[in-house]
Length: 122
Image (cartoon, rainbow, N blue to C red):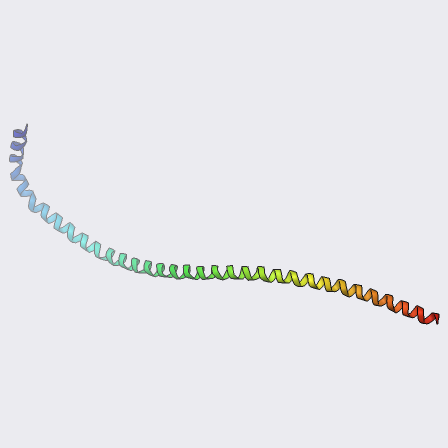
């Protein structure tokens, strides 16, 4: 089998020698055409990578801002909770003071009525 393959390749060798220059011209033209196509593509890719780097920087800055904002929101939430508990304490104190004021007003009214009654009897 191998001798037949070698014999056939030997017969094709003159044809191959004529095709090598044609193939070489084809590949050179193709390589030149690829270089012409690749140059604009490479510049486009470099500009895209530059814009991607800018976008990545902006995203990193925004991520940092979001991290800071999250911390501020947490701080405001804890401050809000503290102020809410203080407000509840003030409301309880105000309601207690209001109750004492009502009680004192009632006692004062009773004292005035008793004083008027006692003054009228004498």
